[in-house]
Amino acid sequence: METKVVTAHVPLALAEKVEDLARRLERSKAWVVKQALAAWVDQEEERHRLTLEALADIDRGDVIDHQAVQAWAESLESDNPLPPPR
Image 1: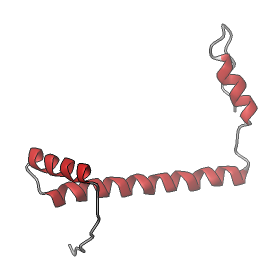
Image 2: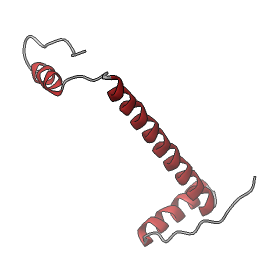
Image 3: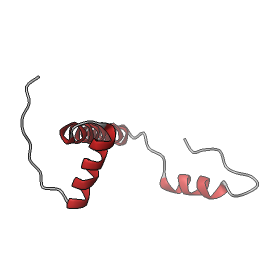
Image 4: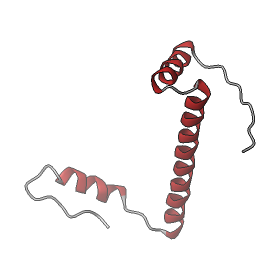
């Protein structure tokens, strides 16, 4: 696998946490940083996918009125909760 060096300045406290994790896991600091960066990139890609999916729902008109959701949420504390809005 080809690699590329990426440099970043991080707060000292964060750098120390990375060093502590690397020591505890018996891994290199580079390994810890790669794992963290890969997890963050995956999370952001998923957030983007979900955003696009939500925007497509809106374009199709597949939405639930805010007032209906609010009324349902408020009814959950009552003796006769409303069914979830559709």
